[in-house]
Amino acid sequence: KEKDEVFPDEGCRQEKDDTSGSCTVLLGKDAQELRVVQAIALMQLGSRADALKVWRKLAAFSFHHCPPFDESIAVYATQAALCALAVADGRAADYVRLAKEAHRAAFGAELFQWRYRKEVLESSAPADTKTEFWRLVAEEPTRSVPSAAEAAGAWHF
Image (cartoon, rainbow, N blue to C red; front, side, top):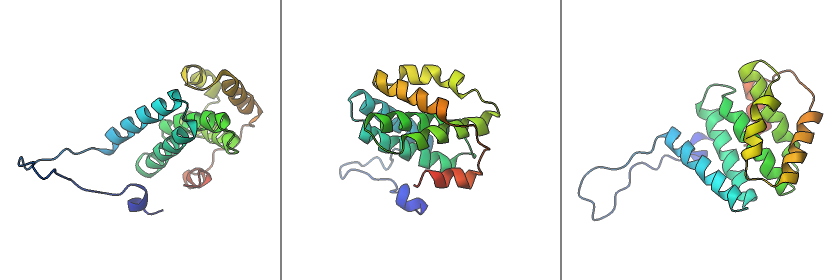
């Protein structure tokens, strides 16, 4: 998708009765932080299918605006995997692979399980989902790191 299709630039909007001449500007990083809060809240409410959509939107923004293999991508893929597992979405194993690849590309070592243990433990996902997540992580072979374009393409944005 073109940039404007994924993240339209809607500009500054003012209410009819606003005579201040100013508007609030929301930077991309601010929007990302709000999306993270939204995704976490959706997970806590049990709306994991909706949360999955938000985690994917977060990842799309990071691929578009951040350096290749930004650490946030591993976080978003991890949470997307947990959501996908909870709603029986067939892409869960793909998100696990994407999380491990992004983490290895960012840090150059196979430390994913050690670094993400607390992330998964604190996630608002059912216990059986977390157990299945770690099973998929253990089964996922260590692969060579793909190019940034291949990694982005694997998300099918």
